[in-house]
Length: 420
Image 1 (cartoon, rainbow, N blue to C red):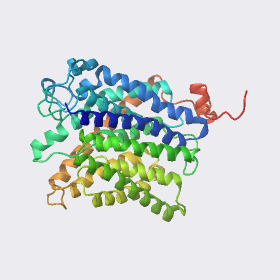
Image 2 (image 1 turned 180 degrees about the horizontal axis):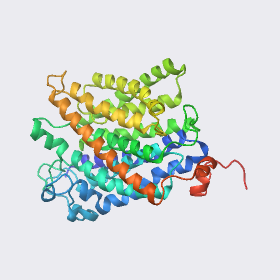
Image 3 (image 1 turned 90 degrees about the vertical axis):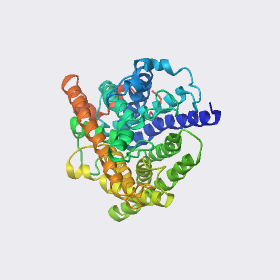
Image 4 (image 1 turned 90 degrees about the horizontal axis):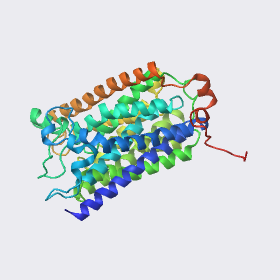
C-alpha cells in the first residue's frame, strides 16, 4: 500500500466534502433572506441522508464486483455496509475504504446540486424523499456507468462501466469523463430541470423579481467550492502524480478564464459586472473543466473556460424565455456547463480529439455518454418528483412561500437583529 497516495486520496475526499457546505453558502446567498435557512438545509439534508445511504448500499450499487457487473444496474450484496472493503487487497495502492470515502463525497454533492432548482418553495421532508429515491435509482447506477474502473490493477473488482469501457469496446475509444461531467453535472442539471417543471414557478417569477439577498455569501460559497474542486478534479487521479498536477493546473486556468468571460458578457449585456456574476462564472468554468481536466493542454483549458463562461452567462436567461423557474441556475450552469465540457473533449482531448490528431469518434462517444445520462436522469427525476407532488406534496403553499419558508418549515430565521 502506498501511504502517499492513501494520504492524497483521503485529503482529496475531505476537500470534496467541504464543497457541500460551500454549496450551501453559494445557494443560500442567492435566495431571499426569508428562505436562506431552508435553502442551506437542503444541502445539509443531502449530506446527512446520502452519507448514510452510501455506506448502507450506495457503494454496493455504484461499484459492484465482477460477478455483479452483468448489467448497467447491479448490486454487490457483499459490499452493503462496506463489509467487503475492510481489508486492503495485496498490491493495492490504497485501502478500498479510502476510495469509498472519496466517492461518497461525490454522491453527496451531486444530490445537493439539484436543490438549487427548487429554492424558495420546496418542503424539506419531500426533498429528502426525492433525494433518497433519486440517488438510489439514478446517481448510484450512473456513477457505476462512469466511475467503476476498479481500485487497483490486480483487484478482483477492477471492472469498468459502460460509458468508459463499454463504449471503448464498441467504438474503439471510450468516453472521457475524468471527474464527473456526466455523472455529476449533467446528471444533476437534468434532474434540476425536471424538478423545476414539476414544482412550477415561484410566486411573482419574472426577470429581476428575485435578487440575491447576500452576495458575500455567494462569493464565500464560490471560494469554498473552488477550493474543494482541487480535490474533486486532481483527486480523481487517485494518485499524486503528473496527471493530478495537470488536473490541478487546469482547475485554476479554466474557471479563471470563465470568470472573466462571464463578466465581459454581463458588462456588454447588462452594463455592469457583478460579484454574483464573477462567482457564477468561476463555477461555470469549474463545471466545464471537470470531465476534461486531465485531457487538455492548459491553453485549451483556458479556451474551454472562455466558452463556458460566455455561454453559461447567456444560458441562465433561457428560463425566462422558455418559462421554467430554475431558481438558482442549475440548468444554465451545471447542465449547460457539463455538456460544454463533455462535448469539448471531442474536439480538443489530447491525442483523440478531432483537432488533436483524432477523428469524430471521440465526439460521438462523448455525445452518447452526455445525452444518455441527461435523458435517464431527467425522465426518472420527473417521475419521482411528480409522484411526490401528487401524493404528499412537494411544494409549500403560496402563502407560506410569500411569508418566508424558513419560519414555516424550520421555525428559524436566518437573521435575528434584536433580542426577543
